[in-house]
Amino acid sequence: MSTAIEPFDAVDLIRAKRDRRELTSPEIAWLVDAYTRGYVADEQMSAMTMAIFLNGMTRREIRDLTMAMIASGERMDFSGLGKPTSDKHSTGGVGDKITLPLMPLVATFGVAVPQLSGRGLGHTGGTLDKLESIPGWRADLTNDEMFAQLRDVGGVICAAGAGLAPADKKLYALRDITGTVEAIPLIASSIMSKKIAEGTGALVLDVKFGSGAFLQDIERSRELARTMVELGEDAGVATSALITNMNVPLGLTIGNANEVRESVEVLAGGGPADVRELTVELAREMLALAGRPDVDVEAALDDGRAMDTWRRSIVAQGGDPDAALPVAREQHVVTAERDGVLVEQQALPFGIAAWRLGAGRARKQDPVQHAAGIELHAKPGDAVRAGRPLFTLHADEPARFERALAAVEGAWRIGDAGDAIENGGPLIADRIGR
Ligand code: URA
Image (cartoon, rainbow, N blue to C red; front, side, top):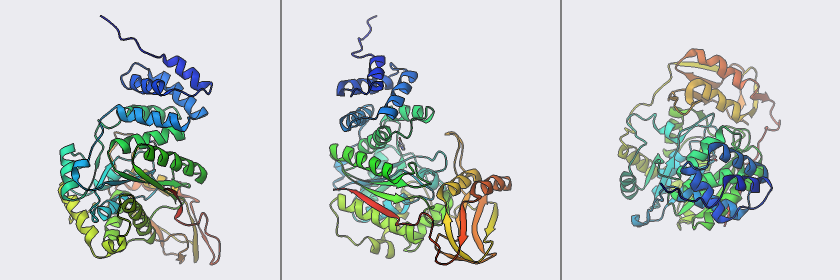
C-alpha cells in the first residue's frame, strides 16, 4: 500500500506561527485541507488556533485561510437566477430578529436574498429557532428548492447544508472548546468563508458592539468589520458593514415566537422604532450594493409589499403565516419600584435570562422552547410609573423564573428625568465600506 507524501509537517507550521512567522499560501491551504481530512489532529489544530489567537495573521494569511475553508466544500452559484443577490450577516445579539423583516423587504425590490442561517447557542438566538415557532415551517431545503424559492418568491431563509465550508464547522467546534473563538482572523475567516461559499453577490455585515455582543469593545468590532469587508471585496463580493450598538436589547421582545410576532409588526408598518430603523438601514445598504440605491424602502413596509413577500416565503417553506404562534403557559411580571425614567437596561443579562427561561440552548442537541422569552414594556429613556410593568418573563415551567430573575438583578435602573442614559448613543455608530 502506498502512502501519499504530505508536503508539510503540522509541527513545523505550529512552531512558525508560535514564533510569529508568516505562513505561506501553500502552507495554509495544506493545513486546512489536512485538518479537514483528519490528517492534522485536533490537538495540533488547537495549538495552531491558540498561536493565531496570540500572534494574529496578516491580511494575506487571513485571505488564504478563508479561501482554503471555502475550498473544503461546495460553492453555490446563483448566476442563473438572472437577478442580483444580496445578503446580510449579523454577529448576533439580544433580540436581534432583523433577518426576518429584512429578507422579504429586500426581496420586494427584485434583489434575491439567499439567507443561510443557523440555530442559536448560548444567549444569542438563532434565526432558524425563531422561524421554527411558526407551525409547519421547515428550515431544511435542498439546493434546488432554495433556487426555486429565490426565483419564485425572491428570498429564502434556510439552514446551511453540511456541504458549505465543512472545514469551518470542524474548526469552529474546536475553537469553542479551546478558548479561541474570539480571535479576529478566525472569526472573520469563519463568517466570510460561509458567506462567500453561499454565492451572494453583495453582503452587508451588521457588526455589533456592547454588552450583549460577541465583541464588547467598539474598536475590536471595527477591526473585525474592516477585516471582513476586505475579505469580501478581495473575493469579488460587494461588501459593507454597519457597526451597531448592542448594549441594550433590540426591540421589545427576546425569545423565538415573541420575536416573530414583533417582526410581523415591523412588516405591517409598525413595530419598535429601533427594529424598524435597523431593518430599513440594512435594507438600503443591501440594495445599494446590489445596484438599487434609489428605491423607497420604507414605503414597502408601510404599504404591505414586504408583508406579502414574507407570507409567500413562509408558505413556500410549509408554514402557515396565519397560524397562532405558541404562547407560554406561565408569566411573571416585574414592575417599577418608583416613578421615574428607565436609564439602564443591559442586553447581556436580559439575553441570559431569556436563555434560562428556555428560549436558548446550552448544548447543540437541546430543544428550544419557542414561547419562552421576555417582553419589555419600557426602553431606556421611557418614563415609568411605580407599580406598572417593566417587563414580563414567559416560560412553560414556573420553576425557571427564579434563575431568570437572578440573571437580570441589577441589570436595569430607574433614574430621574434629565439623568444620562447608560450606554445611550446612536443605534448605528459607524459604517465601513466603499
Ligand atoms: N460566527 C461564526 O460563524 N464564526 C465565528 O467564528 C464567530 C461567529
